Length: 463
Ligand code: SAH
Image (cartoon, rainbow, N blue to C red; front, side, top):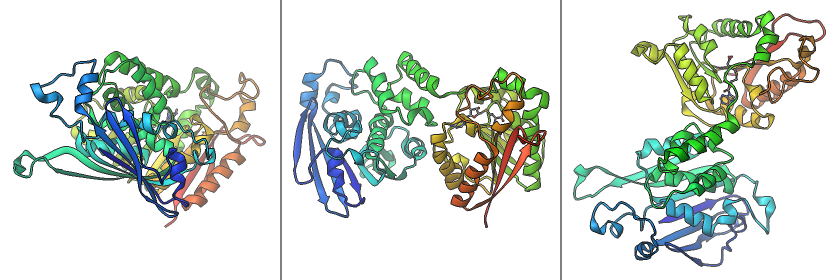
């Protein structure tokens, strides 16, 4: 089993500091299941590759084994893929041999830890039970460029088809720590086999290694199930902890409703967005952060929209929307035109690409301001629709809402609310960065001093 990590960051030998392993030394560490060797096939200023080779000792494994694995035949404990396949043993070795890098520690050069560097990871014989499609579903949302090759199971018997083992090459510019945490969690999830006893400690490991990314991963359920080997009570607990941290309420809070209701502001936003989409001649539209599908319900009624998709980070919201749009038992034509899926605006997701327009109605203020950079990259840099429409509250107007204490936001889950200038500064910078034109429109009754209660930015990609 071989893992290599290559960088072309200059000086590339910084990789040695990050891994806490000197490029000039060949190092071997004994582990419970065999040995791990770390060495550098290349190490110069321009390119550096670190390799970790695992030698699994099946005999030692059997002796140490406390837990009886289900062996399908007598020699199954000895005749199996453990010696060469990249499985949970690899994660274990990452923690034992490259633990400091995995946990983001670097004594000698702490400045390197948070630096994004170009990384290329190669893994041999990755058992992906779920095939190429699964590899893409797990790694693509994290922004990896993926190359995967498989081989026939046995060249003497081509009819047996391909083996489930892939040689993987993953490329991404990121911190080394983030890449190692992805491998730590996703390799055993791909393998989907039980090589160790799953105890409660595995929940903590999963949550710790997945802390920065798992809660937003569109396949978090699948990953959690596979990582915890389908132990239902553990899976439930892990997901609850993940979701508790992240999921905002799918609909406006009672307070926001009460404040805005007299103005029918939310309806007004949706009307304005639909009028704008029609004026722009849009046919396919994706509602990002669609919540319970209120805007989608209006869009469906308009024949001009031939493809209407909605995405939300909240499972609960998607479930409600499926009901409200009567999609569960819908016919094939309706199901083709209207699709809902669970996903996050902070991850690359192929399903967000290829639309004339993307709409984010009252969504951005639900994300921490520090995550807007990522959101911009995803919406404007990755999904790249011809038009983007974003609405968000105008904070200046808040003083006119009776019953909203001074300085408070309209919704407890709002992470920020912008003035008109703040919105315009942000949107203008985004438009410049990603080559869009942008214009602004107020939504709701306009107060001379404070403007309208809501504001909209309409972006159009430059041709
Ligand atoms: N656009 C809807 C809902 C607005 S409430 C409407 O007009 O009624 C904000 C929505 O954004 C919520 O449903 C919330 O789950 C969703 N959301 C928050 N963070 C998100 C993220 N990172 N990715 C996708 N959706 C997100």
